[in-house]
Length: 573
Image (cartoon, rainbow, N blue to C red; front, side, top):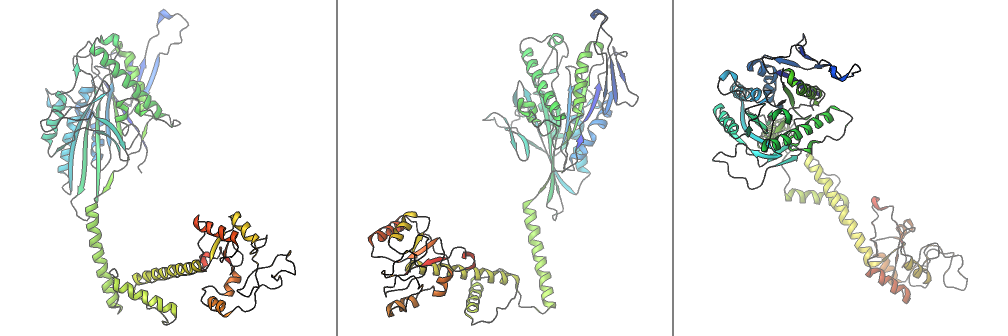
């Protein structure tokens, strides 16, 4: 992430013959401006009216040429844009204070061109000075008029009519205008043609303050993308420069606006008021919410206002006494803007196609290095290619023979073989667990101890006692594990002193020999939350067990693997 830095704010004073020297004074460092206002005697002796203001800024441009303004304000921002930093230059001020002249300039004289054409010229000159990079430049021109978005370059013949209205869209990469046409410019003349095309489509009006007053906010954006001509470098940088010419704030009484111009002035003042609210919120570090979506202007400039960019504000003011009230308002806005911090960072991206090619080359070189190392170490049998089906089957055979004891050790050749050996061990273990579980399911029925109805039925049948212990039945047909209940009477068939019955019959012995669970294993798993019981002649138990099987309340029997030691089983036959 980049380091946080303050927004740079400059003041440009419009030259006038009636400059108020007694009211407006500049500091010796040319970075401060003081305003002095005489007290109104008509308000009486007790008058607490403020008469003095002092504003500390990054520079005061008084009687400055267009060249000096560009060198001071915009040159560094444009030069850093080619290194991957976003930039924003904004002109703010009252109507007729010289915002459009500062941003665009005059067409009558080449020396009077403004920041925007000079920025385009600097961009293409810097591209010529960087032959090691392939840099593409695109431009767009947006107008915000009466809270509606318009494309000033939509009148070009190759730009089709927009089906849907333009909208402001936010994504993880930032804010962009959906539906706004972006035009590729390969040379400086193409960029100037697009600029002049957009300027002719701007909405202007005439009133007492300005004959050619801008009635809309305009944002000219230069998009740049710089790729290294070195094929081994997959990184590239992107950046954009927003050149914002705001409509002038005006007092309706002074401008004499009527009709359509009055409506336009209302929208302009409203959007500028929302802009100032957003700036105040950005300057207050305790504020969590910034009202960017109050109007289209602040929403479109969300990335620029306190975002990832180098931002510069040029505040244009009048130097006449009659405009002192608007001058104070503009200077307050500039001082608030200086409290806002941005966090510029290089916008680096990766070319996926170049990255894949570079990784393929690196892989070939690493294989060659390994081949040289193996030949020096007499390890010619080592291969680093992925294993085929025959090799995997051979490893599976070695693992099974190793588990059976017919193979003493498995020869280790490379890392791929080690990984495949462990994979085959896992597959064999999984197969054995499934086989053991299937065998137990065929021989026994599993009962969940949380099923109280089933437990009650089994207790009534005499298979377990009230404590959940299994009870043996010495009927000569099988054997039992567990402890007989204390309430068992001597006259009953069950014997409490024996936990294992006499040797079973031949059929039972034969069946027990084929069982996958031995008597020793049964002793280890005699305490369980699940039990295994066979079919019974008792009707209640049979009904309950069949109901359990139908309702899928039977839990799978875990194997005797280390993972499943926490779920032993108790078995009755």
